[in-house]
Amino acid sequence: MPAPETAPPRPRRRRRSRGEAAVAWALLTPNLGLLALFVIVPLVWAVVVSLQRTDGFGGGTFTGVDNYQRLVQDPVFWRSAANTVLFTVIVTPLSMALGLGAAVLMNSVLPARGLFRSILILPMAISGVATALMGVLLFDENSGLIDKLVRAVGLPGVPWQSGGTAAFASIVLITLWWRVGFNMLIYLAGLQSVDAEIYEAGRLDGAGGWQRFRHLTVPLVGPSSFFLLILNVIYSFQVFDLVFVMTGGGPGNATSVIVTYAYDQGFVTRDQGYAAAIGVVLLAVMLAFTVVRWQTSRSRDLVD
Amino acid sequence: MTSTPLAPVSSGPAVAADGAGVRTARPSGRRRRDRRLLVVRVVVAVVIALVVLFPLYWMVVVAFSTRADLLGGALRFWPSALTTENFRRVFDSFPVVTWFGNSAAIALVVALISVTVNVLGGYAFARLRFRGSNAVFLVCLATLMIPVQVIMVPLFTLVTDLDLYGTYWAVILPTAASAFGLFLARQFILGIPTELIEAARIDGASHLRVLRSIVLPLSKPLLAVLFFMSLLQTWNDFSWPLIALKQNELFTLPIGLLYLQGQFGSDYGGTMAFALVNVAPMVVLFLVFQRYFVQGFARSGIR
Image 1: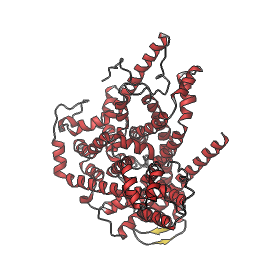
Image 2 (image 1 turned 90 degrees about the horizontal axis):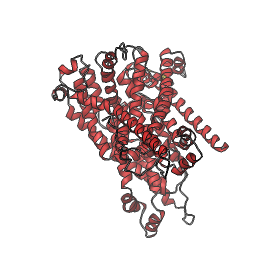
Image 3 (image 1 turned 180 degrees about the vertical axis):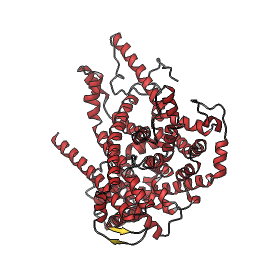
Image 4 (image 1 turned 90 degrees about the vertical axis):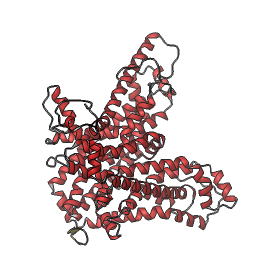
């Protein structure tokens, strides 16, 4: 989420007018109404439902924190949580590093730079389902192209569907294909606001290419990195489309993540209260991460 | 495609992260090294581009491949013959046209609602003073962090209670309830010179009139960014429509695609033909209106 900037400086001479506030609230009504009805109310409701034992949709009976206690003892939940964390820990740094590398490349002297950039960001236009199905097609362990290639060079076939680790890897690879372009775009915007003279100064001081990258580029795109770290972690924690379509959480629960598990509980098993509890835990973890990251970056800024 | 053009250095402005764009008289060893570097860069860029393009190329190839090619075990990178039989099979077995229409209608209505409410809200937050303005703005932004999966259970009950389940509105309203454009709209409107607005206000124009005759005409790029972003996201949306769309005839293309894959199983020709129907319109829009998407993604950080 972008850092909200402070409100505009207000002209002092203007009198505070009641009318202005009324107009403001009137203009905000459609927006706030939609958000309140379809986000805030369901959110509060989710917390309430998570404290209930439910049978299908509709009323439930309050059971306090039973759902949360069940969660703690549920091995499938822990498996899904561990998979989600693993996915996040792999995908976030990789997509940021590849994105930064591609952005540096796209920001350097390169023929047909515009064309390359367009190609790199093209996956952003592709729907998650179509992306996942391309993955299914390419990674099919019986007829997929990747497997044919692997066999053609004499290696044994990879169990992309029947093996847990391979299935997980196939999701990670497709995710990177889908998301690196976005990371590149944000980094590119960051790089383009950097003054080229800084690099020339670094070069005159005798810094080599890697040193300039390490000591100039990386710190200079710090704000983009901060922004992307939060966005990538939030995305990874919520990953759903690709997993749901490519593996459905299988084989076994090898690729089950928190959100696919919550979906199964809520809309397949129809254990609504339990699904809501999983959702609430997910939100709490994401909020905690964002707040901690925000705080540490603030205090670091203060120290600097 | 792997040939590496050496001669023409970028025609665009020489922005160079590594300072290579700033060229003065230098020893020739230096220049030879710069040239080698350029070759390396071009090769890397071509490889990356091929990796990105290949799955899309493969999707097109499979969609137009004959059954014999697809079932044959041979390793081939292009079809031996082109056919439209996959498309015909898909269009005969599924209401593809209806699904396309559903996707288009839902995406358009969501985009229109979203542009309208976010521009109105953006103007209020940017230019009007009222108590609690900053707090309300922060709360709106905070809602962006809530994934639909956290609220899907009560949201489903809610749309059912509101008698929306089984209609397009079950998807449209919750999807349109997003503050994603609010930040962009506020920032953009803050950039419109205060003097213009103040002058009109002193002349006695109401806020609505200022909005209509000053802010809107100056905000065309903003409107385009918000519109295309919203259209793209809604067109490609999966999680919520999967839950909220009751019956077959209401499906959007991504949901139809999943349904079709369930029926067709490993008939990749048919699945990819249909995937192409889902993907092609947005790829075309994306390429034609690229600058709006780029601005939208870069500034709002969606995805």
